[in-house]
Length: 218
Image: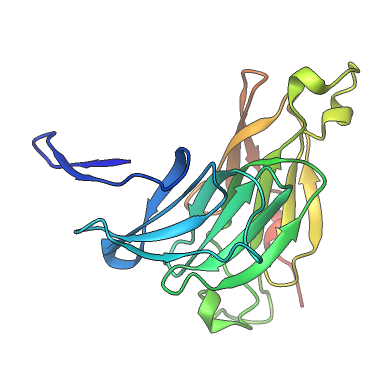
């Protein structure tokens, strides 16, 4: 992994201890870099010196290659997706494991809704809202069985849906179908009213939420 200055000169080179680094994001205040890759370990590096500061525990962390990494709007936490059929939520400063989301397919892409959560856990970026209309914030997972291994023409066999999970309760709360191949990219619109997905079927799909989605009462 290489960082470049404004003059396009190499400013910092970070090499993963084993295998390729698949994803990297800036940590809080850009003082750190968070990376993950083929060896399934999540690491935090000093962005100025390149020194390794923290790495995830092998017992509680991912067991297979980490394919994706996405941070919350406030940068306080981030989510990783892995071929071990799980996604994990981490604290951006301490690398403490917060939540684990289990699924039945390899995870190639992860993202988080930028909207409000239940307001029950300030460490997850809780915000005050008016009235009792509180939006449930989601973690969205995408992936699916390798297309070359799907032996039927039924796209459901490959499990190519985008799956929605309650961020706090870790429960699956819904899914969006449409792709005929593994989903490799997911991103929310900054206003939280839609999200996009990209798959190996060659399509990028833009999904808009119904009005009822924003009026959940709890």
